Image 1 (tube, rainbow, N blue to C red):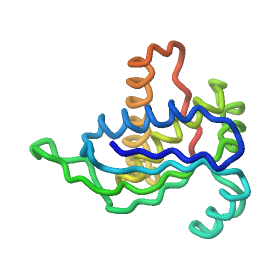
Image 2 (image 1 turned 90 degrees about the horizontal axis):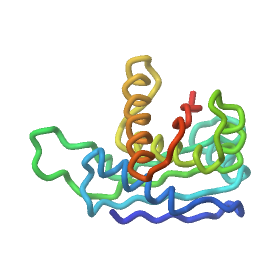
Image 3 (image 1 turned 60 degrees about the vertical axis):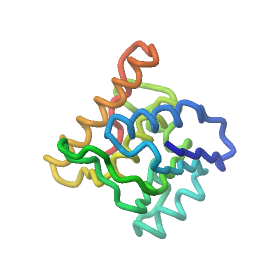
Length: 165
C-alpha cells in the first residue's frame, strides 16, 4: 500500500501507528496492495473549514473522508481486487483528544486517532452509519479491525470504545 501521512496540525502524533493501522485495515478489507491512501492531520481551524465547506456543519469534527476511485472490498469470489486511489482521510488531534478523554473507556489521543483512521478507511470503502443496520455493520468491522491490529502489535487492555456518533 502506498500510504502517505502528512501532519499539518502542529501537534505531535504517532504517525507510524496511523500508517500501520491504515495498512492493516486495508489489508483486512482485501484492498489491492498497490492502492493509494493519503492521511492528513490538521488543526481544529482547518478541520472546521473543511466541515463547513463539505458538510455545511459548524465547528471542527474528528474525521472526514474524501473518496476518489470509490474502491470497494472485493466479493469473496473475486481473485484480484481492483487497485486505485482510495482518497483522503483528514484527522483532527484536538477533537480526538477531547473524545478520548470523554469516552467511557478513557484513552489517549493517539488511540483515538487510530480508531478514527479505521473509521475513515471504512467510509472510503463505502461504509456508513446513518441507519441502525449500517451502524452495526460498520462499527462491528471497526472493532474487529482495531482489536486485530492491537493483538498483532501486542497492545493489551481494552480497545478504545467508538466515540463517533
